[in-house]
Length: 111
Length: 117
Image (cartoon, rainbow over all chains, first blue to last red; front, side, top):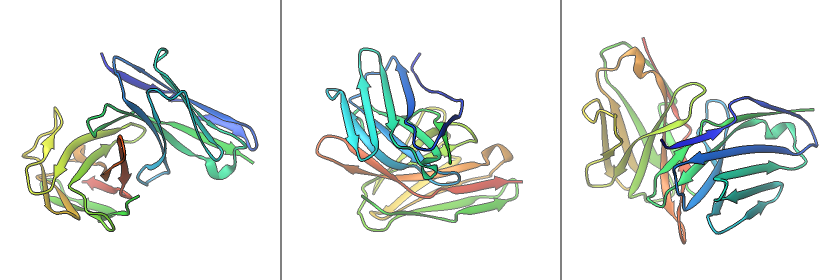
């Protein structure tokens, strides 16, 4: 069956450290993978997109990797700050305009 | 990007009544909008794709007669939950899809919290 999985347990890290979140999928062949940030009671906000033929993408303190062999994407936040505390969602873009979302991983950055 | 608004942000209604949620694209003409539902601690689940000037496309398992979608203009889509029941209580979010050079990015509204008593 098709699945997209993120670590459902919250990730707690100390300010200044690098946060690494994982997104695994099975039985999908996404053309692209997107990462979104969602704060409580709010809609998701687009962060980064990576194509299937790209290994890595960076934007300021954010870095995304995409391994189509492992069927995995890693999302890194370097020099994390308490303001980075939120739920991060990965989404598979199958090239149809629709997105398939993971359940999200909640990140808590402690000062 | 696109700025997307939703109204109302919160609504409480009695079981059996109908509730309308509006989704507006404030700075972008959207031929396609998407409606999602999110239960606590769960993923966003796509309910339907709203197409301007034509019928919405519903995902498997979503009752089109219960969740009425009207995309009357390029800036407005509405979702009406008819005969709402407590199990329809959820966070409803719309999004606007913007075509990029090779893929679409979605810009989401702030969501509407529906509570059915």
